[in-house]
Length: 313
Image (cartoon, rainbow, N blue to C red; front, side, top):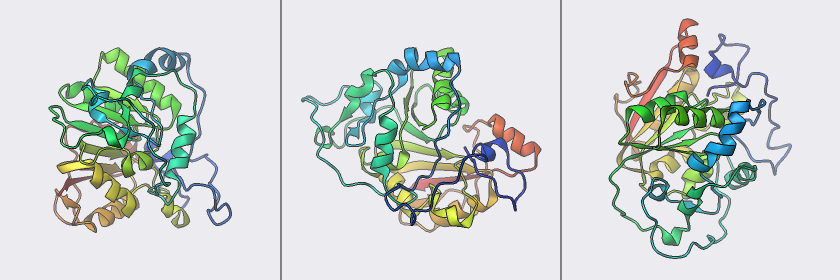
C-alpha cells in the first residue's frame, strides 16, 4: 500500500499514491512524545456493506488483540490452547517501532476502536502459556498491510492448506477483505487491526510463522521521512525472530528507491536472511503473489515492480 508522492519523481501508481493528500506528520523533535508511525490513519466512510461486515463478519474472522498479550497463531485456527486459565501478561516496556518508538502506544490506539467481540480472543495468551515446539501441521503466513485484501483473499483461496493472518490498520480495507472472505467461503484467514511492529517485536512466539509478506508499503520518499519507512534494522530483526528457520520474507514495491533501500537493508543482515535471488539481486514475481489492480495501473504507467525474496537462516 504505497502511499506518498514526491514532486520530483514520476507519477506513482495507485498503490503508491493512496496517501498523497494525507497531512504530513509532525517531526518527532517538535513532539517528542508522539510515536513515529510508518502509516497515516486517514479513513473514508465505510460503505453499507463494510459496516455489515464489521457487525456480522468481524466476530467470525477478526481477532481482538491487546498489545500486552502474546498471540498464539495455532489457537487462531482451531488448535486448542494449552490448559490453564488466561491471565493478564505482565506489563511490558514499549517496543521500538520499525520507524523508531512507541509501538505499544500505537497498538493500544488501534485496539481501542469499538468492534464486536471475537471468539478468537481466547487465542490471546500470556507468554507463560505458550509452549515452545508445539506441533504444527499447517504453515502460517502473516501479511502486513493487505490494503483492500483482494490479493490476500486470492492467495488464501489458492492455498487452502495454509493459514493466513492479515494485518491492516484502515477499516475500509478490513471491511473489504471480510466481505471477500464471505464471498469466497474461506475459513483459513484471520484479521487484525494492529501495528505490525508491536506484534512482531515480542507478541508472537519465536519461529511461529512460515512466511511474512510486505507488499507495497508506504515509501515515504522525502529524505526527512525515511525514518518512517517500516523496513528498518529493528523491523528486520523482529521479522526474523517470528519466522521459523527456513521461512520466507517476501517484499514488493513499485518505488525503485525504496526497492534499493529494502535490498540494502536485508542484504546487510546476512546473519538473519539469505537473498534467494543472490546478493544484490531482485527476484522474479512468484506465481503465488497475485497482481493487484494498483500494480496493473502502475505497469500501464511504466512503473517497475520489484520483488524481494529472503530465506530465514
